[in-house]
Image (cartoon, helix red, strand yellow):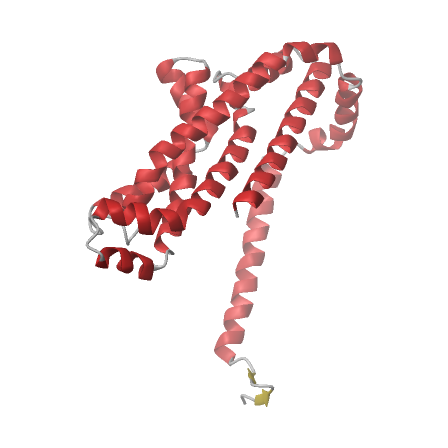
Length: 271
């Protein structure tokens, strides 16, 4: 029989039999899913390799240490290429994503029935494909090099920047928009004086945050021929030069930490 207690304004009620059965069925389904997943994993796993993994890991680490620091001189050029890929790709992504965001926002789109769904489709499509896959496709289309990496980063950035920006546009204070509209301002003037000032801090923060993410993603695009330090990583892995791989990992880690620090400082100053 349901029991209700009133305590400090909160109402407590015992679960109904239907709710209790739903909970038990949910746990049962979770258990069945776990068993099936374990069977699939067990079927496709060679456990002899797993048992030998600690010895193999120790052997790899012994060959990767100490790092070959003399190789560091060969990484400054590729590292600069990586930074250029991330920066130019982010800039291009911002240019492409900004109009898409305005077309996707309910309060700025010219057509909620036609234009907005198309803009949302572009955003979802961009976010659904990893930058590494974009780079792989672009290398096959336009050839290997930095251009493929820049465009891959840009295409991936459209979804991230577009989604966060159109959400920021939809959350603006409409009272400011109505006040500017009441003065007889044109649509462009409303954008310039009512919408943009409200979203400018969010826009700057989103852009810097995406640049920070793109620094990390651009480090591996060279694995598919899109240039940057990932190309050096692929070369070292192919030659089993593990001491060089260690140096590359250290450089990538330092670069990511520095970009994270810069991003945090800039976003703190903006917000």
